[in-house]
Length: 145
Image 1 (cartoon, rainbow, N blue to C red):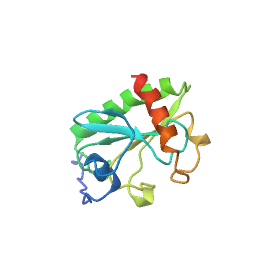
Image 2 (cartoon, one colour; image 1 turned 45 degrees about the vertical axis):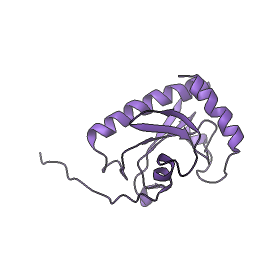
Image 3 (tube, rainbow, N blue to C red; image 1 turned 60 degrees about the vertical axis):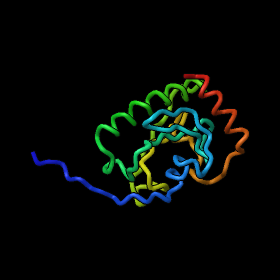
């Protein structure tokens, strides 16, 4: 067995998630610690659509350090439990896209948590949600931790 190949995609710190992490762009947060941030997707595919991102720069699944990835997965699980509970969902989908050809629209690794089935979700990035409504949904999720 050979060693894994390391792919290093250059990180562009002008991407929207980097700006959110620096506080240059507002977000509606549901969870934050020293390592990651979870916040509402402003163009949700369904109500409760939440994003979880690491605070360390990495573009794709192949670019993140294994320990950081393990921590990101751990916190994605914690947030998913709260989303599922808050949205009273029987199930949920976790989506992680890599590279523009793989459907990734923001070049910063992130996980989407969608309550219910992704098969019934709307198109991503199609319609911005009302910030007041997102804030109410975020409060429900924060209360579910």
